[in-house]
Image (cartoon, rainbow, N blue to C red; front, top):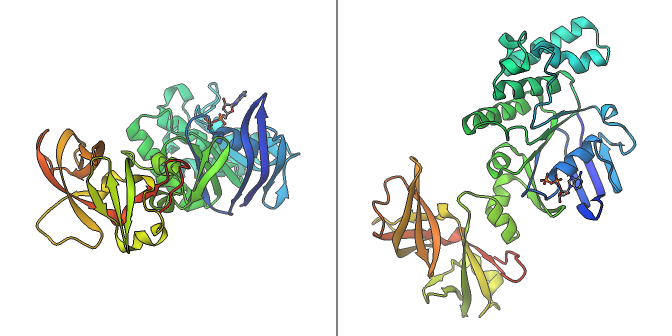
Length: 367
Ligand code: ADP
């Protein structure tokens, strides 16, 4: 078991500044997910923690000790890679046991640990096979098994599920989450997939250009993004960002779209906006915050909105529907049977309690 603390970490590749003065603390037993678009520095950061890259500046502490000068194998970490990195000429059994044997672990102990790990991962019947005789998901289980038997104090995962098809990815994601519940070792997991990040993490660390844009519990980042980058990165389909202007009249604040339509903000949203009359904003409405209007009375902060359907994309459970809001295209996520056909007049509700307002100049969320 170990906590991880990075202070002032910088990494350059030539003149590419891949990690830019990063401070990060991951608690003992926490499942932290480093997420962000391709090239934001997630793998570099993970490899720096592993000792596969040397930082140009800053300190890396694992379990309270500075490890900058320790080689990877001296850091007591286990790493699972995207490409599995199994030895093709060794059986599953030998692959899982390899690290233990290399460390001269007594043979009885090796067998016990391999069997335990194989049991936990449901691959007990595959121990005699070679990697080429396994499916992608089975190979990834073997790679995870090899990490488990080491009883490392820290697990690092570098996009471990990227090579798997969608269904297998969902299954393995569940298994990794269960594994963390069982062994409670600190885990740091890199992915560019926001669904993986949301579903696995105790804490998401969202990176942008080698720096932390925002970190926190998944639901906190989703519901209270601090910037338009965070708002757009999390959520699928993406949040709708609709250009508008704020109008302040006494205690009331209204969002006025370029189409001339306006929506009154609920009282809880207006406190920070009293002096924002005339300010340009992007009104962020998530697809999930639309609904089909019924005859029922509306909750506070929920308004009706009449529009016309354009593209209709059923997923079985929900239907993504392109509509116009404030004169621009937006996507509403509705119930499967809420919409019939293209070009239909439709009465929606919008939950303005969940609206985020962004200053388009700075990209910061202002309410
Ligand atoms: P991510 O994992 O988020 O996709 P990386 O950590 O792989 O990002 O890369 C961060 C930046 O560093 C990118 O601009 C990438 O091109 C650059 N980079 C990564 N590895 C190397 C390398 N070995 N040599 C040169 N540039 C690199």
